[in-house]
Image (cartoon, rainbow, N blue to C red; front, side, top):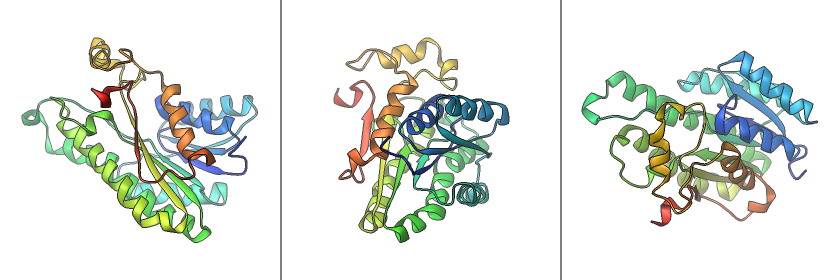
Length: 246
């Protein structure tokens, strides 16, 4: 129960990696603020955490711009009293040829994947720094680290998150706020289900040669959020079955 007394906001936590992260943090004692668009799914996650003896509340949020990020941050502070741990998990992914990408899709990708985390950190990190402690864990992707055909838009948006992670570590680390990121490989979630066999093919190129379960990614996030990672700042941790090694 290493996170007892901590308030954790996990964006996009009504499904997939975010939901698994909410459970993992709650199991370690954190009071988890579950966030997402679906009231029904949010209620289910909260009920499951409480049934296991954990603490959780749901905050509905459709994160797509700076105002929606600021609004969520304000409601999270009102609900929890403060935010000690921020997990920037909410994001969207789309793959396809560069020439087939519409401007609206480009703008939506960068708004959700880059702008929202930026303004959530802007809203919450200063108070963490004033208290002299806090943790931010960002979610990026393995395809932010190498070229992948069809992933120019998604990969570049997450590459921005990787750089933001390092910049924020330099900015807030001296005042007690640890900022790190996790870069997952292919993971079986509701969001990746449409990829079908393509997910297995992508995973086959890594030493582990299999697709991850969301809980495996969540364990890495929970590690970075906990005291066991007290000397870890500004890192992007690959949790990709070894794809970064080949």
